[in-house]
Length: 480
Image (cartoon, rainbow, N blue to C red; front, side):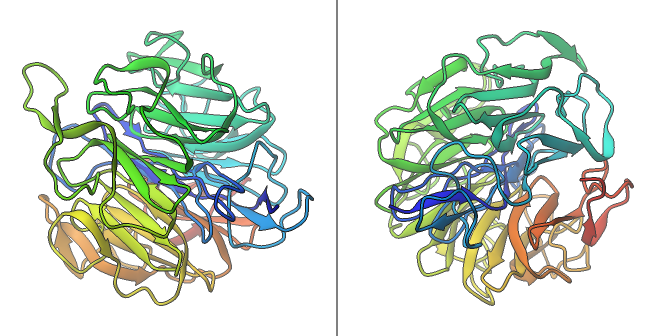
């Protein structure tokens, strides 16, 4: 039986009310043999909707999926060393044996070190770093008192870690019960919002194999192929048939045989053992890909707010088979296919099909210059890791998040008419890449299993190079 071992890790995205992050996806070697968690954070879904932001950080690898930010490879023996870079993520809690794994939240980035500890940089206003301060940093700082970590995922203004004992710890904002510790208050306050400045344990959760953090909700893949979620739930993104949030994990209804998960802004998707995908939550941009952007239900943030299309339980993505990895962004989702192609659905601009419209069904990304081995969906944009170790990105580019040396078009996308590219652009100067993570307006990559490079927005120091200056080409993270 093939065994999965940690290698390098990517990131994902999401979109939500006060700020949340979407997560990544897991991966499997030979169907069901190994599963991994990915962390993708995203902000925004390409629409001019007030207060709706999302971050992504997910990377899916060939023959597997990534849910947190660490990549793993499959080996045909039972050792715990990495033997390739084709990326799968753990069959169970393990320490990364080679280098780091990364995850991108709304305005912060975190890396899992080879020693099982975590370092974060960027915004720390809601204590996303878990270091008992609210001081942001343009260089990595250590999360306090955390060891034995096997995977990480950054949400909007919070972060979660999968532990070696198959439990989960989270820290940061807790307004919606995002930390899963049974409360929506405290234990502390960060910028007027409930938060925890140090890691707290998710209540009653054991046997987790992967995690994914969205804008305000988090999901865990369980050892038996079921999924449990907690936090924000206005659009049914917890998948339990309700629109009521929960500060403790609840089981996604009717879902068995899941091998990977990815939490977007206000929707969630799961990769199934047969290569199909099921999604639930918000659907007004076609995020669920069940044939359109209507229904099957109507959900709303409040009784006096206009409702939006949603599903409170999983629905099957139409016409998609042979998927090996998934990544949910702010208002869209992408799937890596068995032949190295990529299919995406949801909000316009981030789908890579050279079209101007959203799609409630999967469309093929056009113009990739090689076979994709991993994917990561962010806020209004997406990236793919190619078999040659290069990276291509498409979608919004107003902050240089495509990494091609420009902050301009060649086109404009979305209601705000932001600069974008509707087809893949090659990230400048990157080679030997083993993992990618797309966030809100910033992207990071693990290069040659030793160096982390980031590009895009740097308002809070999320590029990790000691400055607050944006960069439309990759720069090296210092101090890891």
